[in-house]
Length: 145
Image (cartoon, one colour):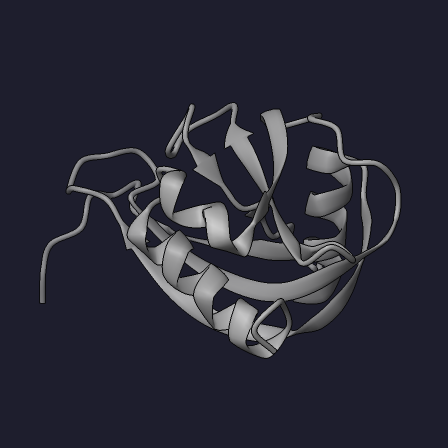
């Protein structure tokens, strides 16, 4: 067993692969750590007492202004940063979603939003796990489904 700092905790978060009717996926540029300034999926921390799917819908609405329908669970990702890093262990639960209403605009924890076709995703710098999650969602919910 490893020794943990007294402030160690696991943070549960959710992420959304958001698809539009054109088969594009929505990316946000993160305004805050972790991965500040990088392209990512809309999402964030689950609040105490909040159900996971409610957290997904809330986070997408807060960061992008979009209302989404949950299509299904994609996968669960461990994001573990080096020992000593603040909030070093995240468990991220990712869902496939589709837009129900709204116009995408950066808000809350996002500085930018962009719709990207699945074919153009290789040109966008993404964390390998984000790319993997989008790929799984494409097979189940998006342009490859």
